[in-house]
Length: 271
Image (cartoon, rainbow, N blue to C red; front, side, top):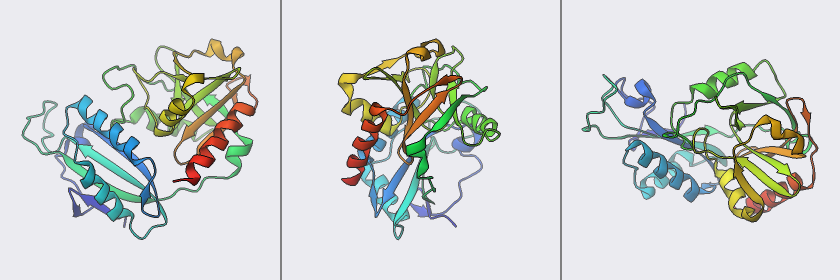
C-alpha cells in the first residue's frame, strides 16, 4: 500500500462526493524526492499556488505541505510524491456552494525506471491524433482534468519507442504527452507558449530562466520545422531527451542539446 495522507491523516480514501473525483476540480504536483530532499520545491509550490489562485482555491500553507511530503517519503531513497488539492466536498452539481473545505492528498510512489540510453540516443517524435483544447482560463496550470493526455497516452501505446507530441486545435505545437518541448534554431531555443493550453513544467521554467537571452516563447507550427536543427523534450524525471525527428522532419542531436544536458547534470549534482 502506498504511503498516503489525506488532510494530514494516514488514509488512501476520499469521499465519493469530493469535487476532485466528480469534476476534476483541483490542481496537483508531482515532486521528485531524493533522500528526503524535494527537488525544486519552491518552484513546485509556487506553481501549485498559481493553480489554486486560477481556480479560486485556498492553497495550503507551504510548511504543512512540506512536512507531509517528507512524512510520506520517509525511508525511501528516491520517490515521487504527488500532491493533490481539490475544492473539497459538494459534488451534486457544477456550482460550488462555497462552504466546503479543500481536500489535501499527499502520497508517495516508487521512482520510475528510465532507460539510460534515452538521453544519449534520443527518440523519434510522432504527432498524436488527439488535440489539446484551447482554454486560456486553464492554460499553463497543472489542473486535474488530464483526459486529453490519457487519450493521447492510450493512442501512443501502439507506437512504442516514439515520443508522442501534441498539437492544439489551432494546429500549434504544444508539448509531449508528459513533458515540455524545446526546438533549436541556430543557437537559439524556442519553446511553445502555455497561455492557452499545456502545462508550464518545472524544468521548462528552469531552462527558460537559465538561458533567457537565447530563449523565445512562440506559437509554433509544423511549417516552421524546416528551420529547426535540434529538438528535445524535458521533464524532472527523465531530464533532457533529444528528439531524432518530428514527424517526417529529421533532426540531429547537436551541441545545443548536449549543452543543456550538461547544464542539467551539473544542476542536479548540487541538489
